[in-house]
Length: 104
Image (cartoon, rainbow, N blue to C red):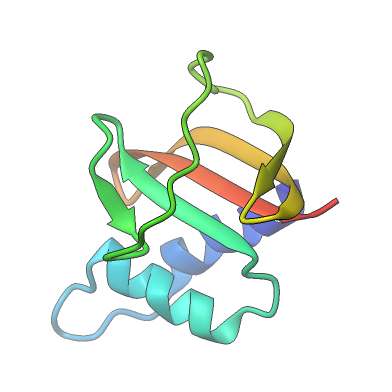
């Protein structure tokens, strides 16, 4: 799970920029299209505004912890048991709440 987080952060940091800066939501959308391990990915601002996926309906609640270091837990989401990583990280100078999940 932590390797997936590193790949995501590296992709967003190193993605070639066009003449027009790419919004974080678009970079994450592109990653989701190209990534084979996209079971669950949610990104929110620190105040809880959804950045990605745009228009998504499911929401994994943020734990009581600040998750300045990675927080792990096992959850049932939409009938599936997932191992979930939640981590407060900085992407492109923006502090965000990252939630990633995958099969146990």
